[in-house]
Amino acid sequence: MIGSGVAASWYYAQSDGSPELTGALADSAPLPAAPRGPSGLPLPRYVSLKSSKVNVRIGPSQDHGVAWVFNTAGLPVEIIAEFENWRRIRDSEGAEGWVYHSLLSGQRTALVAPWQKDKETPAELLYASADANSRPVARLEHGALVRVEECSRDWCEVLVAGVGGYLRQDMLWGVYPGEHVTE
Image 1 (cartoon, rainbow, N blue to C red):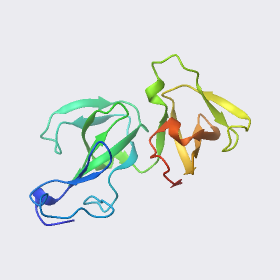
Image 2 (tube, rainbow, N blue to C red):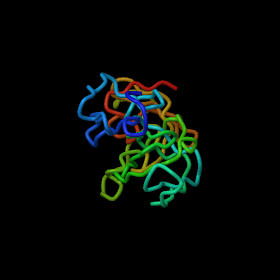
Image 3 (tube, helix red, strand yellow):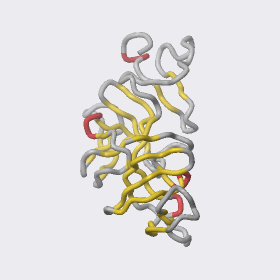
Image 4 (cartoon, rainbow, N blue to C red):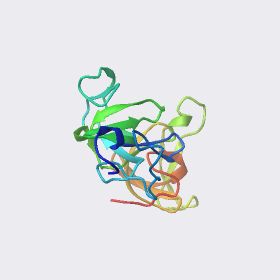
């Protein structure tokens, strides 16, 4: 953590993913090479919701009102800032709010091409191996929730409803382009 006190104790990842130091030291402190929050973990990063009911608040305390409630465990969210035990998150639709850290899990999940959900496009194919010429094992609807087992290069191994296979990494919201993920 840079500095002391609340004013310099959290980082914010901008919408383009670049770090921005906020607080009293923002104008004088150089940005770290690998931005990390007070937790010591990188910012931004993807996590998932641990509980089937998660209140998303307007600010980082229980004194702030609830902006909305998630009702599905396992949904991926992106942590873009930290303040003490609170995490500022962004969902797949771009909505942002604050969640208490214990309601989040390091288990990696992703949504299948949620940006295609309301369009008349074919479902995404889940392949037997990390090769578009391999045998398709399932068709996944846009917006389907998958568990991310591993990602390397351009493919991710995922699990959905007991069926495992591979999806192109650029078809998932919940992993960064080129990110290497291991279980």
